[in-house]
Structures are given as C-alpha cells and as structure tokens.
Length: 345
Image: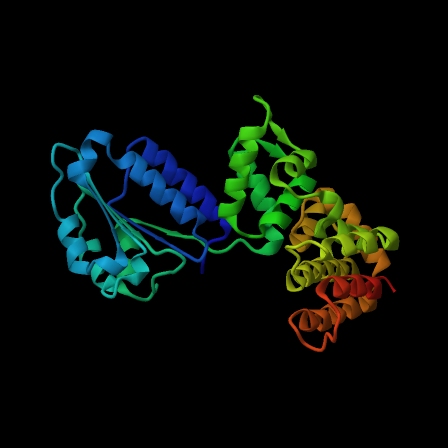
C-alpha cells in the first residue's frame, strides 16, 4: 500500500538531511504517480553526492530509453576516481525495457556507488525482484498523489517546512488555483517568497491574491462558502464571474462542488451518530482545518441529508451536461449559474 503524503514527506526530509551530511544508501528507487518528491530527492542527491571537481569522472546521468540494464550495471560497478564515491542516475527508468534486470546488481551493490533509479510517474512491480532487492539494501521512495481534500493540509505542512505560516483561507485559495499539482504549488510559492518583504513569516489571502493572481472574492472557494450559507445573491454573482473566466471548465467546477457536498453529507452522517463530536472526529471526517468547522455546521443545517443527496444527484447531471451531454445551447457559464440557482432552490 502506498504511503500517505505525510509519511513520504517525512521520509524525504530525512533523505535530504542525510544527503547534505554526505550520508547515502547504495541504491535509491524513486517512483510513484506524483513526481514532486522523487524529483526533489533526485535533485538533492545529484547536488550533494559529489563535489564539482569530482563530477567529470564520477557522475553518470542517463535516460531509460537510451540504455540497457547491462549499460547501467557496468557503470555502477566501476570504482570512483579520485573521489569517495561515484553517482549513477537513471532518469525516466520506466522506459528501460530491461529494467527488472537491475535486480541482479541491486541485490549486491557496491558501497562506493550511489545508484538512483527514477521512474517518473510510474512504479515498479512490488512482487518482482527489483523492488524487493532495493527494499533490502537501499531506499524506496513511493510518492502517491495528494487527494483533493488533503491539499490544503499539504500546503500548510509545506509552508511550515519553509518556516512560514499560511492562513487556512490562503491555503484553500492556493489549492484551488493549483489543484493537486505539488510542483505548481512549489513554483508559485517560490515566486511568492521572492516578492514578499524580507522577514515575512505569515502568508495571508491578500498575499496569495497579489502574487499568485487569483481573487478569493470570485473563486470556487467563495462559491462553496456562499452556498453553505445559502447566500443566494453572492453565490449567483460569484458563479457568473467564475463562468465568464477564460480558464473556466465546468467539469472542474462540478468536481469541487461535489467534494464540498460530499463532505457535508459525511459530516451529517457523523452528527447522526454523535450530535456533539469532538474536533478530532470532525477533522478526520471533513479533512479540513478546524477554522472551517463553523461553515460546515451552517451547511449541515441548511442542507439536511435528503437535500444534500439531491444536490449530489444534481451535480451528477451537470457533470454530464458540462462534458457535452444534453446541455442544449447552454454555454458553460450559463450552466454554472443554472446549477447554482437549482442548488439554492
């Protein structure tokens, strides 16, 4: 079973700390659908395994489509020249036809070689020898995608690792903009940090709005908030603005609304079992920062179970329409306004 992002994050921080202290395992297998952590680990190993003066004779970086297992094993079995170790990196390793044959080397690797096998967006078969060999003698980093409902927490954790606090609203807004693309979040964060005054330690919604280029006032985040409160005037205004955006995509909007109302339904199921749940139980069910609990209390009151289920059924219909089914002549922006009105009715 793939590790959750919290475990992967902790593992990668440990690998990075070791790499900066020049502590390496003989083999690293970097894999998984989400490339953020494998990319980060690979870059840090390349940056720290060798000094600049050692790279010419002791660093080999190749791509899976261009090499065979024999080529990689031959390179890995060489001894370093005028250095403590040598580094062999196989990028896009999933494209190597004979990838599994690397298990022969990985079962008995040289201590003076650091071999990095990086499968971009793919994973090794855990039932086979390569994966099992690396698990015994090296390190496997498996990076699963961060799910939609986890992204705000991931952003908060990521910012904490950078020595920054981020307001829950700001994390939600950045997550709405970037989705679950961790690399995009990292890039936007770097741009943000360069534009912030020196010494800034806390990120607000206005910081995200100014530096990332997204307005909270007219976002899916604000639409779900207005719907939770049954603020019809604001919800319809936000829906019309979002729908008019050149980047608007009806399926993405419906997906965000579905996630929101699914949370409300899960919360209502919890309340039926326990009318006064503690914050820990709420957080586990909702998957949101406690800052947002009051909104879900209001939403549960405004959308009882039957109403919430009818909204979810409605979202399924509009997901179909948004993908071209039975929408008639309605444009995507008109569909969003129509959907919003029907949710409120």
